Amino acid sequence: MEDLKQKLKVQIIEALNLQDTRPEDIDDNAPLFGEGLGLDSIDSLELMVLLERNYQIKVEDPREGRKILQSVQSMAEFIQSKQPA
Image (cartoon, rainbow, N blue to C red; front, side, top):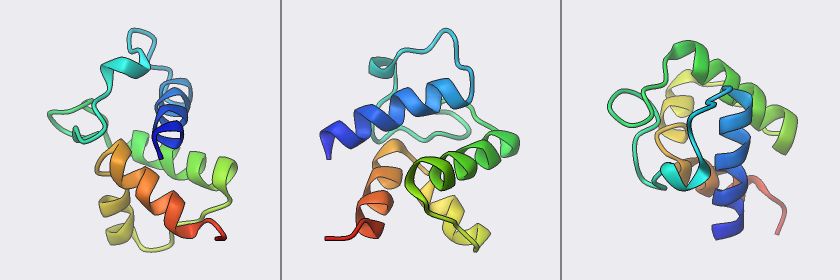
């Protein structure tokens, strides 16, 4: 799980072009939107594309998307739950 979270942080930084952010700057449980990283709705679309491209996971329900994209931790847990055992 730790490897996945680290990988996700790097992917988020690259996908959203967060030039002044390092993986260690992102807290696993910090909110990605609002007070945390301060991402917006356009960024959420980019993160959905990241999930689809890198993990072959398509999120259809926007309400589910909000829960999934709350934090790096919630994204990692969702990815792990969708991976074959």
